[in-house]
Image 1 (cartoon, rainbow, N blue to C red):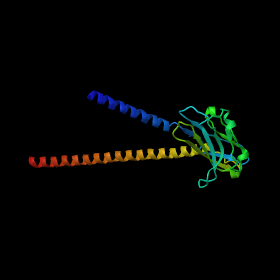
Image 2 (image 1 turned 90 degrees about the vertical axis):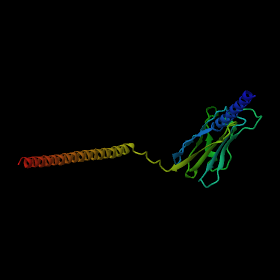
Image 3 (image 1 turned 180 degrees about the horizontal axis):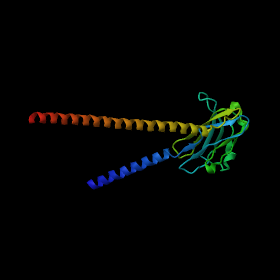
Image 4 (image 1 turned 135 degrees about the vertical axis):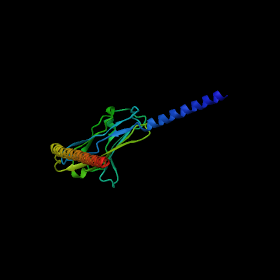
Length: 227
């Protein structure tokens, strides 16, 4: 009876562990990859990328994608692109199922540029205007993933793109600072060594003087005894 009970408890433990592992793996499968921000020149076209990974094969009738726009973090998100194929409908090309709700000013300037077979949900925004600046959210739902994927990009619009940082100057400054620090450390080491050496010499001189005094006192005492 004891062996049977232990075997039963062991089986239950393994089952619970399997359920736990499946639950954890299911919750960690979905991941959306987007850049944190994009800088774009006013009047140009820009691709806003969004890709995702999933542990499960995409099943179009249950797959859902939403793109939303938010002018600032305090504003309400406005949906401007969606894919949601109902059950029982014939599977068609992903792009054919993308709809563009007319809820944002740039609705007529945004197009789908992704590829579902490559887990790509990117969009292209044409003739970017200053009013297009804001947060762009990419949402993904791919059952049986337990969590919904989400990524957002901050789009910054400039009259002219800021020049790239001059890495040469940064490297030169870093090298100069590094050289100064190295020289300072070397100077400290040299000073410490000289102090230590001087201290040892002083100790040696004091010891020599003490030994000389002791020898002189010993010679005096010896002469006194002989007298």
